[in-house]
Image (tube, rainbow over the protein chains, first blue to last red):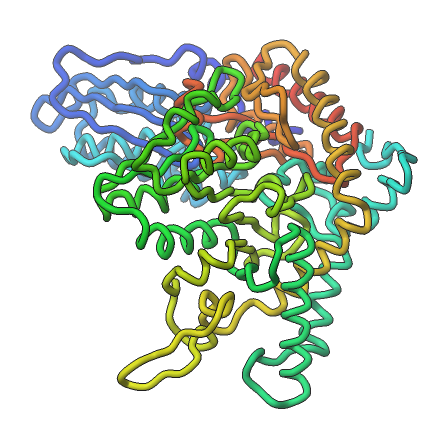
Amino acid sequence: MAELRDLYQEVILEHSKAPRNYREPAGTNHKAEGYNPLCGDRFTVYLEMDGDSIRDIGFQGAGCAISKASASMMTQSVKGKTKAEAEKIFHRFHELVTGHSQGQEAELGKLAVFSGVSEFPMRVKCATLAWHTLEAALEGKQEKVSTE
Amino acid sequence: MSAVAAVPIRKAGSFDLARIREDFPILRMKARGHDLVYLDNAATSQKPQAVIDAIVQYYESGNANIHRGVHYLSEKATEEFEVGRRAVQRFINAAHVKEIVFVRGTTEAINLAAQTFGRTQVGAGDEVLVTAMEHHSNIVPWQMICQEKGAKLRVAPINDQGELLLDEFEQLLGPRTKLAAIGHVSNALGTVNPVKRMIAMAHARGVPVLVDGAQAAPHMQIDVQDLDCEFYALSGHKMYGPTGIGVLYGKAALLEAMPPYQGGGDMIRSVTWEKTIYNSIPYKFEAGTPDMAGVAGLKAAIEYMNGIGVEQIGAHEHDLLEYATRVVGSLPGVRLVGTAAEKAGVLSFVLEDVHPHDIGTILDQQGIAVRTGHHCAQPVMDRFGIPATVRASFAVYNTRAEVDALARGIGRVLEVFG
């Protein structure tokens, strides 16, 4: 049962119960909606962009513990970052949860708690839903993002 | 503790659960280091050795293309295929063997009906009536036809228990209703619909009825003549048979009047550049080389079910469902979704503050296979205001010990999320 605790780390459970930045920032000028049709997870990511920088970020929606905690911690990790920096973090995060990490997890900081996801291939989409949605919001895409 | 080791041996007539479990090789396997507790039978059931053997035997000593060759093997394969059709005819008590059309499964059966009967019978301003508890496969084919024809899809509502509102269903049967397409048993809620009464209501207004029997055929005796439905669809793989084979039953007069579904070999009588004459029913609807091994497996599955007794199977599953409803339903935080008075084989539930997907992962780590998600019935989830449920669904080989394992597994979920 050790693997279960690897997936459901305390930090993840805590974020899923009390997600951070769970709001629509007043200055939102970019947003996107993400949907995982397999499990019904659905999130909206809101961005207040200042030129190329993420001045503020929030999210709302419903999903499993993994997807919600991932969204919550994502908002903390990319706030104040540039578009390119945020995309680089997503790239590293994606490597981490799919088990393709190149030893650069240190760059991820707290997000490293999601390393256990790589042992649960069915849950990778949960962990990356908010990130895909963020990417769409950054690029100003209008259509809904789907994991399928 | 091993869930499987604690199999109680029931002696209700000839019903011997321990022996039944031995018939299913996959039940001996381990999942994530635990005895497999397979409670995802509404998605697909496991297969007994007899079905696996029938498929192997077909390929080892019976394989040839049917209705084509004059040679020994082709004659033998053709005969076996038609014997399989007769087995299905008896299984659902159809009046004629030609009323049994082999298809890939329930989804294809409904699409066939929609694209042939639907396309010729439904016109602009007409209506097709379904219920609020349908599987997507009994919604989308009708939506497609309605969209194409400018017709309207009407939906008979359900109550908070997941039971159809019969009065509303009856009122929705109007002068423009060309067909009622109704589920016999709901895959997401387990509700058993009073289809015989519904069919009588529809017929009183001259409306033909298609019954989606995917979730009913594994659990109860189907008698299409007693029901008097125009169409009945079922899947082999949900009733211990192989994947890729299913049945559309249709009343002969309707099948004869319907245009073909797909064009190709076997569905024709003669082809010239000027004109093609279609084959008689059911072959008119069976273009191309069919799933002969699938029919051999389906026939074996029917024999297997008959060997135990369909009523005995249903009674055992009903006992399990009542037990699970009691045991799981009384766990803290559990809310059952679908509490109809008449149910079969399905226990759907949600857990306060824990998403079904997380529950599914934690149960899986204990070797317990359940389905989590919307069960291809998103309108049902919307009706109950939830994104998904956890669904445990039962088959003849499940045990009370496995229900106990499920309850312990949910206990573990509560620990992790406590």
